[in-house]
Length: 145
Image (cartoon, rainbow, N blue to C red; front, top):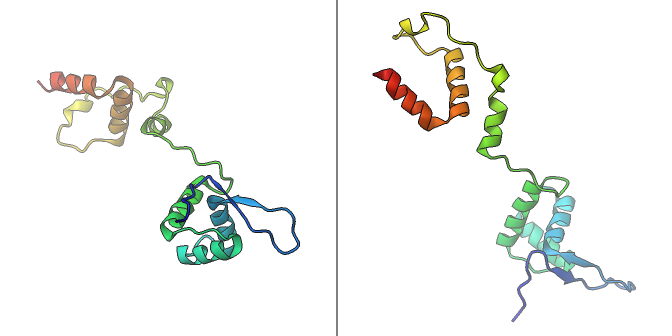
């Protein structure tokens, strides 16, 4: 039976006629080179044939597809993209305390049937980010009584 190679494992390549040095290449690098040659939209079956003929590496199409996705996520430099959590995105949307919206004008609560203004929504968002949802819900309960 054949050995199962892992993604990062280097594979010994047969030397071309007259060459004394053998190149070692990973499966991921083989797929990277195939994509560079064939284009990013190359199908896994085509890549499979290319990798087998060019590097004498056996890969199934599922592995090739997974490797293509990894290479796509890594981007052109191969460094990997930074993942941004919800808190990072929230910090971009919300201003600093010095940028807090001004207080509502007197009589702003008198218009109960009207739609909520964008300015009020932004104030609420700032308050939610500053104190959190639980204290804000408790405050709403107290104010609704």
